[in-house]
Length: 254
Length: 254
DNA sequence: TAAATAGTGTCTCTAAGACATTATTTG
DNA sequence: CAAATAATGTCTTAGAGACACTATTTA
Image 1 (tube, rainbow over the protein chains, first blue to last red):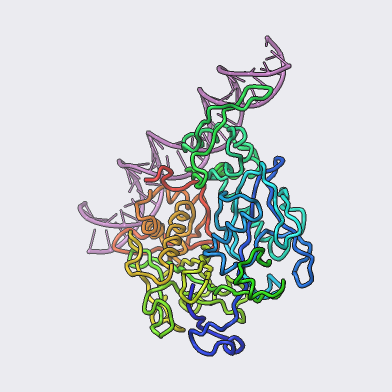
Image 2 (cartoon, each protein chain N blue to C red):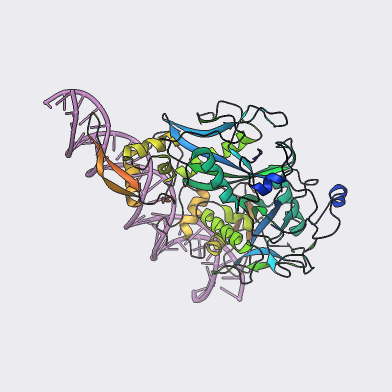
């Protein structure tokens, strides 16, 4: 981005004596995270509660975990995102991708602010959300058909909605849901996550065929036993990069 | 994003007396644009030349058009992008979407900086790039198979590369290339843009079938005459939103 | 009527959708 | 062996790929 602004209002010109001085007002810059998992047969997102202290905006409201960029500590945006992820979940390297950025004059009462949003997918087993820092509380919130139940701080409802849209649309033609499962899982588990995220049934043989054709999984020499026929366990060959399938499910949108 | 940073180094803590004071150092924030068109049978991108003045980084190098956010003038990130677009091209409302953001300590010698990148698609007919502001020059640069010929300022080569990747991958299953054409065009024109962007031939009947099935175009009551059989002219029914096709071209990646 | 480009038709192939059938475990 | 779930197979369908064929213009 770097370059000087080409047009200036009277006000901002006042704070900027000569080119290159960089004395004009800078927006607040932060990073927020949309961390998804699957719990109790539902897609869930990690939210933290805003502190109740005076001067803090949206006190007590639920919000996406995140915070301001620390220019001394964070080398890049992604490093900042990974640091916050580690602080909130203890997980070092889940699937992480950038979602986009939101910025404007009115989204935060403290001033013009912009946030760089990342979204992460992780298994829920054994992960206890940590509040930490100023956050009073951190908790998984299930996402129903109409989104989240509680009101969210700032413009986080819009951001979460965009994240869910992105996840749902990518799930149609990628292996992303596998990152929501624990390391070892069965094909039935995988089908179930697809159905949970998409909110509709998916075809069993179509899923198995595409997954096998993509050479996505490695068998582990073990099966999951239950009160009935045991199921073969698999693990992902690559836990960092999703696979892209050649077609979407249901091209005609049923 | 808004929230206070939860962990702090000794240095940044010094500049931050109490919670809510917001006195810590803020990164530079800007918006950059990747503006694509098709000219002379090639995909092209609009670049501006960095100023040669002392104190300006990357003097004389080609860069993506953009600049710092002006908190007095720009209400949102997208408004900032549209303002810069208007300044550089005179076009008010081309197809515009957010690409992502890049930020880090070392990408700009003037300090920790982040940029929000948008990409735009527009026809090239009648559009003369305008330098304006501090930019010494603005010009369309063709993108060959190996990208751009000239070296780019900052990390703009990486950003441009990401933009081309995004464009190419979306072109496989959307009507995006239509936004690179003038208001009226023939199906042969449309096929040609697809081939230019993808860098490979596309199937004629497959393209026509999917385009017609998507109900994307409206006939205009006119044909383009040449030294041979004239071709029917069409225009987009919707010049803002692309259409998503149910499959990609070449699922098997030829 | 020849050349050239616009536009349509046919046949094949891939992978999804629907759903039936077979396989393997426990009680 | 009955019940239950896992896994596979069969048939249909949508839409892309290849490529031939027809249509319409000008010179």
